[in-house]
Image (cartoon, rainbow, N blue to C red; front, side):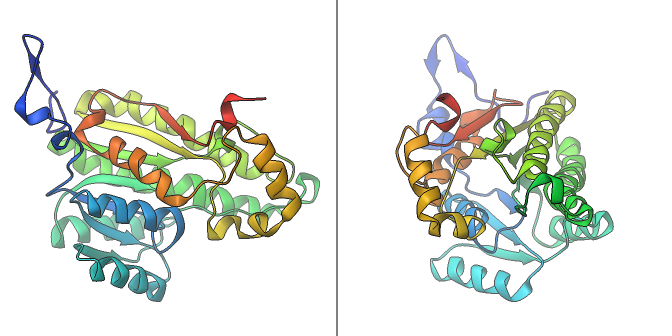
Length: 273
C-alpha cells in the first residue's frame, strides 16, 4: 500500500518533489512526542517543529509541560499540550482521541517517555521493576497501538521508538533498564513486521550517553565521565541536539523504505570493544 511517505523515481531521474529539502520537510504534519517536557523529548520536539511539524507535547507534569510549550511557542512554533499518563491504556486512548479530534491526525509518533532506576540487580526492588517496565515498555505498546490504529486506517504514518545503547549492551547496576530497552528494540521490529504492509514505517532511535536530566548523576561523576570518554570512540558525551537530525530523518519521507531499523546515535560506542 502506498502512503504519503512513498518516494518515486521514473527512468532513473529524480522527481522535483524529492529534492533534498522536500524529503526532510515536515510541514503540515502533526507529531506527538511522549515524555517531551524536557531532555531528549523536548529537543526532538523542537527539531521536528523547526522542520515544519505541529508538535504535541506529552507528559504527566502539567506545569513542566506548559513551561516547555511556552519555550517552543516563543520561538514561533505551533505547539499543543496533552498531559495524559502513557502507562494507563484508558488515559492513552482518551488522550489520543482528543488529539485526533481537536488538533488533527497524528502522522508522527515518537515514543520517548522513559525512566531509570540504578541499583545492583540482587537488591533491585520488585516494585521498581514493575514501574520501569510500565514506563519504558508498556507505554510504547499502549501509545503505539492506539496511534497505529488511526494511521492504519489512513494508510501512512511514522512511529519512532526511543531505544538505547542498552538495547544492545549491559552495564552494572542497570540490568532491568537494559531489559526494557531490549524489549523496545524487538517491539519496534515486531511493529514493523505487522504494520509496514499498511504503509507505516516503525523504527528505533537509540541514543548513546547524552547529557540529560536522566544522566545528571553520571555526568557529575568525574570517574564515570572519564571512563565514558575513553570507552566512546568519539571521546565525549553527546549533546541532545545531535539527535535531531536522526529524528527528522526517521520522521520524514527520506526514510520511506526503512522499517524495523534501530538507528544508533552513540559516538561509536556500540561499534567498539
